[in-house]
Amino acid sequence: MELVEVAPDVFACLQRDEGLGTSNSGLVRRGGGLVVDSFWDLPSTRRLRDLYASVAPDAPARLLNTHHNGDHCWGNQVFAEAGAEILGHRLCPEYLLAEGPPELFVALAESDEVPPGLADLVAALRRFDFRGITLTPPTTLFDGDAVLDLDGTPVELLYVGPAHTAGDMAVWLPDEGVLFTGDVLFHRCTPIGWEGTFAGWIAALERLAALEPQVVVPGHGPLADVSGLLGLRDYLAYVRGEARQHHEAGRTVLEAAERIELGPYAGWNEPERLVFQVDRAYRELDGEPWDTKVDLVAVIGTMAQLRAEWAAREGVS
Ligand SMILES: [Zn+2]
Image 1 (cartoon, rainbow, N blue to C red):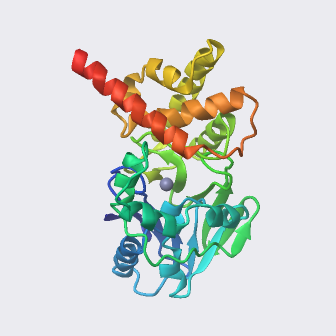
Image 2 (image 1 turned 180 degrees about the vertical axis):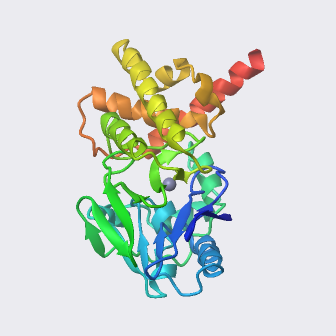
């Protein structure tokens, strides 16, 4: 992980995107210190805490979770034990407590018999150590936008969900021009989406782009700018349009994904996550509500089939 000072007293901690769970975090070194997101396990969050301590010796007073996913929240206790107040959207705690639990991931990672179709997931989980985690949800909750005053530095908390998840919040520092998006932006890596709609996610990206940030710290991937936000918007709009045609033609999610030409998006990490988007499009077209739970086992299985199909095509060409 790499610590970058993106503006005076504003830091991004970037993890190279290596697939599931390699997320980013942020620190605003003012007003007692505000951390934006912890990491997925305790060892990586302790390294994050130590990196922040190297530039801000006092333990941060606050930590905001941009959304409920474990790779942004499961390390919360490392900061909470040092006295940090945990902040988040009103929906964050219930979704956070419903995910996992960490003990299941420990068991999966240690299992000798990996369920069929879950091999890729288990391989990703094995890169982390989920032992010792006590889920520590936010206790200071927001229903919509809010503003924090960090010793005169305004920090705007923007509710932009449901987009990637039900409770997406972005963190905007207007004076510094720095935006932390959480997973509303995956940059140069293919997004995963949970609760939300295409329209909501696209509107969120356009709202954030309209802020004209100088520096955008995405939830996953390297630092970005406005073009990164609009690039993901274009990807989502493209995939939704393609999926609609295949849905009308009666094709399955896998058949649709096999037929979608990724063009410039093929170079984003984990392009097979396209299946998440096609699956969401199909759910929308079928009239299912935005908070329908993703059938993760089915989606992961379809992703594995899609990758096998792509590999077979490469072998032929
Ligand atoms: Zn994430």
